Image (tube, rainbow, N blue to C red; front, side, top):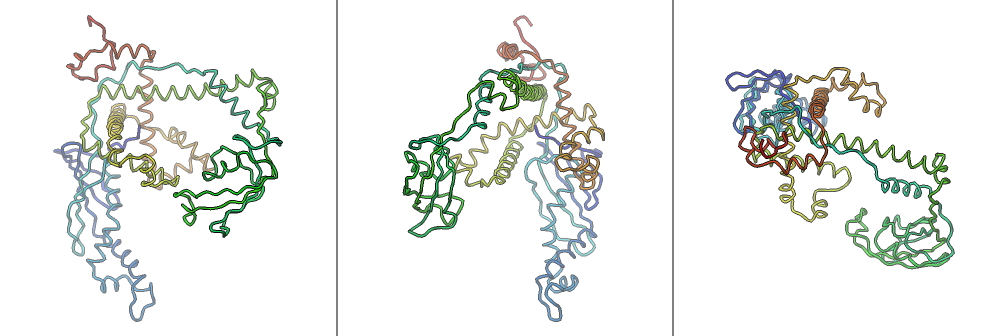
Length: 487
């Protein structure tokens, strides 16, 4: 569930919503149909002039004029030589996204999708710039009941198999490598020297000495590990293979190569037995104490997962009881936002849009269509959370804000109070405040909900009848009440 930005400091007069003017722009918002708004943004002439001068100075760095060194042409002379309208046009193009962001921040609306900027005229000297921008916004929710909802909640449990997996992982960490007097097999390690060449010429990075390689680990280019299976200490092998087409070094990608390899040692991984000695090596008195510690840690994680699931289910129950007018256009726009955020996240791991589409073996439009169901639910959740924040007048206190940012402050080794002031100075504190308010709203819904066993919730769903859809809340009546014949 994403945080939603609420409208703050707004007044409504005959359908016109007027925001408090920002430092740079003045904005008026007109609410349109289908969860869209029109922003009328006025950029004062003084603001325009400052950006025109800044752009002129930037252009002056590249302009060559007799009598002036490169980069030293005064801004007024640049404007005179290039023309004010040309400089103004470039200044507006550079800054219009920032003015739009200021308008959004000033009015407090929650935009959904890309804005549509209407045609505009460049103003004469001394006149403001007038912009008309239309954009989708988070729809409003008409809340149903969000108190006393019956919501499924499972009991946290840890299976013995999960503990066994943790014990096995511990054994792997404490494993020892011992010399094996036999040929190498899958799962063994070999110590090797190697020299790689392409067309008989060694290539940079293609040589290694005393390298420890796990056979079957899949850590090297395809064919390298396989070429060492069955090798013994003292043996030399020649392995011929090709670098993958998507190999990181472009000069090697897709090219055939030959590796001359000398196997120096074969090592066998020896796992410790599952006994008290293993527990003692891990810092516990005996095996039972080790398993109980693992159980406790897993149970703590499981309790957190259960709590998260319950809060999400409680929110979804409140969403099911609310009415939110979500249009197909908004759903498509939010799906597009989700897709772009995912691509941005993948880019930090070195995965491009094209690479992901190739891995997924799907077209972009196909992926966007699959995202629409999640996009619609995300919009409904945000709308309901925003409405609950307003209905309950949730306003995080200064102490709650400090507690919320404390983990970040600790990671950055800065006092929470200092981080709070830095966020306030950077204009980002409102985002933190609204994220925290959204979280508190979800916690409130969950705290006022009644946990029931998953089996009871499943039975309730099975016993609900479509006739209830004729009630005021329509199909949303199902999650709120257990229906039985005779009701």
